[in-house]
Amino acid sequence: MELVDIGANLTHESFRHDLDAVLERARAHGVVQMVVTGASRDGSEHALALARAHPGVLYATAGVHPHHATDYDADTDALLRKLIVHDEVKAVGETGLDYFRNYSPREVQLRVFEQQLAIAVEHGKPLFLHQRDAHADFLALLREARDRVPAAVVHCFTDSREALYAYLDLDCHIGITGWICDERRGTHLRELVREIPAHRLMLETDAPYLLPRTVRPQPAHRRNEPMYLAHICEEVARDRGEDAQTTAAASTATARAFFDLAATIRG
Image (tube, rainbow, N blue to C red; front, side):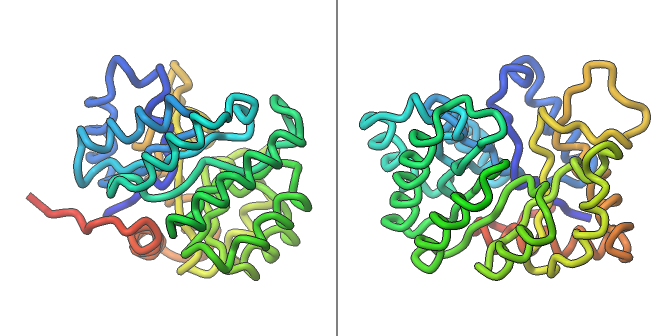
């Protein structure tokens, strides 16, 4: 069984001391490729550096998360345009809107989201998207750009059935994380995940965040890492009424097509 983690924040400081071990554990659990999320100016540069250091295993995105929208300036825009042309950089993002935290003012988030949508349009790259408590504004801007970009994934989907179908109607992909394992706030996803077409469903950990609450034993450090994608796959498969091998094969094929990833070479 081969799995692709489409969203791993491997530039996070918690991975600095043991990244090689993290990648080895991922491989041992069938996670053979990972897309490293670029969520800030520095993080996007670091994501590319990691992808170059681990060719064929790690890939990158380049973008600025809405939490960091106030840091987006002309130099940042120029840097993202420079990064996105590299073969290892597979999507623009993580970009979008977050009205739950509002770490950046909403008007700034909207402007920065539009600027990154423009980069994806101009360079013909997929979108790696974030949305929380901002569905209406997010959807309005995405609609304007959707037919001018090759693909878009709503990363870490946690929203309602109405939102799910709005994204599917725009031919978007859906990323499912360990949020589905959270009995406090993710139970609705166990029903919704059955309704996502196999060719639109992708899996991710969002490591080091969102450690699946159903993992046993729970690691003492509470850090999520790509190895736990296998656990997420098993949970999603059960909720979809299929075996894990089926879910893994479909999600992996979908991820490789979406991000234009090379098939792994067995050694």
